[in-house]
Image 1 (cartoon, rainbow, N blue to C red):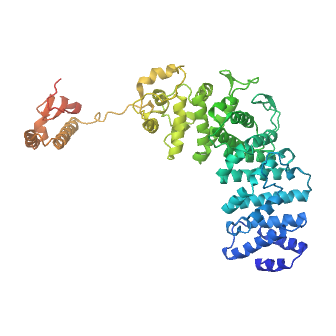
Image 2: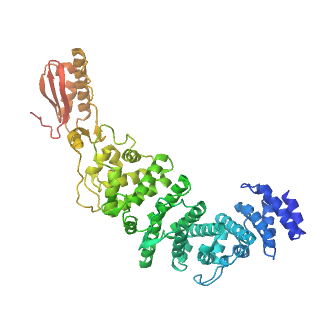
Image 3: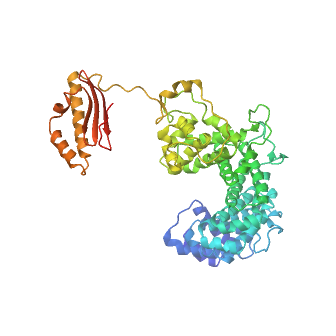
Length: 571
């Protein structure tokens, strides 16, 4: 139906007719995400009419239909002026059962916790969806949300998480994520005054069915545990994204430290869980990695300070199951071959910092990624091992990717230049070493344990033959003069001599006119007349000398030497 006709009929429509007209509009535009610019004014008027209807006392079915219309309209950022007002945002917040305007959100009771009919729940869900769209598309609405203290209403609703219907919980968490992402100034209020980090941690605990068996230790899910249901996984992802925003701050206290260790334990539990699909499991692990990067590195010991279960390999007295999951996740992201900056660098950074600060983590990861060298016939970047893949990334076109990969390997080598070159070759490592001022060798600034890496017998036996630039044993190069005739060798020798003469002529200093003149006179002669009588020795002109040797017409060695003081070098 034409938008003008809908607006004309809405003026005189009762509640039933309004619902019928808007339902028709919703059916026609449910999949519309781009709008005709010419009808922008008409859509603004429709927004105003819908808000007017919502401001009256109408039935939940009519409210739901109006909110569906507003959700469709809120996809267009150019028509949100009527909604991005105090009145408009308060109407939507009321429909979403969000308490606003309270002085303190700690003790207020959330209307979302009250019993609701199915229609009333649908109204709450649609209102939350509208708020998400409006907040995302309108900076003015973001400011109004701060003014009406939408954050307090959201935190009050977090306390009723155990009674949430799935979509109510999902979009409440998404709205909190958007508010904390788009308004950095609100994050401090959410953290310090509204205790949102603690509330979100409790939401995660409940959603992931965490069962505590000790301080910062959750019961490990056994093989018989069913995959995490899709709905719970969705809510957990939204909670993790909101927590990521709230943990970006560097300002921390003792209470935060306890909370961060609690989060680390929950994230370890999440890493050990499976979801209904591999894609969803990977997504969950990605969000866990992002949040772990925000936690103090000292909290990462929670990942490994767990009693080793039966049948699980013990490494240094620590449980490395979670670390192995992170290594596997890293390999999955490397093998994807795309989007390395967003997909791979977070897990590389996490493993780098964990290895730098926790010796057991570093030793375990090195055993997996950089095992003792045995076969050095191929270049370090050629092959299918994790080491080969990471060395290839050291020369990636993206500066951030190659720096992160190089730093990871450097830390695994305890920031020893010699160890790094052994695994990567000088050519691949040159960028990192230049950036750190270590091209001449040495170590980084971090102190590591004194345990030494032992080389395999295979590596020791071939070490003298390894090219340090490429990091592998090169095939012997063929002798370029082996198949030449004697005449060709004579010709090449004279050609080389002539080149030396020309080169030395260009290096004569103007401060030595006599030598320069003398050289120019003699260099005009045929090269063969200068060189052919000599079997071996030194040809010296001013500050330049040529060392050569000839035997039966074959050039065995030719070197170019520049003597700074002009003296003749004799052997």
